[in-house]
Image 1 (cartoon, one colour):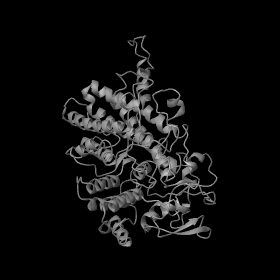
Image 2 (tube, rainbow, N blue to C red):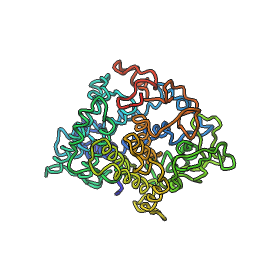
Image 3 (cartoon, rainbow, N blue to C red):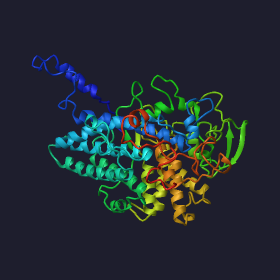
Image 4 (cartoon, one colour):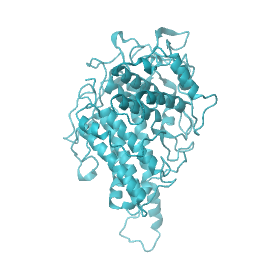
Length: 536
């Protein structure tokens, strides 16, 4: 992907400052106040997607902790809420506040495009960012301010919309975006994307439309069978003819090694100065997660200091070795296990398969997710692009290929993804989680699809792994005895739910509960699940 220079409002402010030297400038105009005539959608647009990457990264971290992809090792303070799942109204507030701060910028571009048709493509792509951001919010908080959510000073106490209704509105938002893309592409006077103004697809409008179809498919699969099922079933037949985006949707607003690197790399490796990130050296995979890579799992600091030898579920040596340093002896434990330590010498946990480089694209939508969504849609009566078995294998293949691809888009040394997939299937021919011929019931088919999505999403797509678990209860967990190879649930959970987990985040106390009487009075993270949560 072509790299871009990040454009922020400071660009516009600098331009205005220079104009202050113009003797014809009206002295009653503030040269430091950006105006609509200067801060045009094309100048704001790159920063909108840079912010979207930051938001997705924050939700990925939270989801990865919740669904067992990782946990903080012994001695890491500040995680008592996570150990108990008793999230107060002060936990993860930035996830909410940052999204709404960024939504205001997104809405500015959408409104500008409504006022000036020349910016149609920019407005359409901003609608996609809006839909993505709101889905992040709904999937963790439920009801959110949507119709009045970004009015700013016009309404500082917005009403909250029902979560299912927001999903319905997001489907309409995506459909409107596709119409707007096509209008902008056909209009000779429309300002087109260029390689410097489009940090995702470098000006390819067809790919933008396909990306919209991918986001729509995610919404539909998640909302199927819920109170808006009528809308969902109808919408399955209304995808744009451009089809789906069958490549990673990577955001790259100019990531580099000197001053602005990929936020995932910053959190899981080191900053631009080279200082090791906390997640990089003190966060470990759970024992439960490791059972999807090893048929026998050693739980402990080292092989010599293993305190348990446990049975795994699948054999996946290749992806295990691609992901983890020292695999198959990577330290692993269970969240809440007070005996859980960490390596005596801090070391990076994850390898280059996910930490490709400081300038790597931030992926907003992975190819493997598309194929698993298509597989689930096909398995539930909506064959959109191949049957479920075909897309199931494509999803596994896409997972291997992503891990075996370097920062420049080429395969890493020794990579042979097609052969690796065949070997993986052969090594697990006795499991219906891999061998499609053995998945004979609808429940087994859905379990196989979601389990493979869970494996592919490990640490890079945590918010989707967490949402899919709450939606389907897959992959299966068994909390009896809290055996670390049977569950990722914390040993210290105080949740009264049968699964001993939380179902949501609580609205921020300072910015919402204290200031907006319309905010739902949610007092804990155990009740009021999201509308698509079928585990309640």
